[in-house]
Image (tube, rainbow, N blue to C red):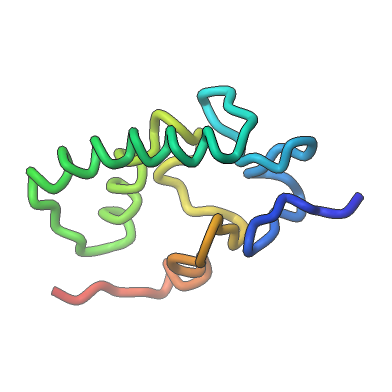
Length: 106
């Protein structure tokens, strides 16, 4: 079966997307891409404000993962985890293979 999940970087094993709907698997049971997009943004925007109020230091992969988890833990089961495939809804933020070798500068 062709992987037609319509993401810029496909999910060949459907680990992150639903094989039938093509929508990213989520904790909310949303099966419509637009509804998921709007819900994700609403939740993440609220959490972004909370995160920024604490002026987080981004010093390593763990700190990036912690922010990702906080932003998306209500939406995605893998929030805060390193992905096993390069999948992105729009443009790739940071290729997964670069996290292991990347050091952050202050």
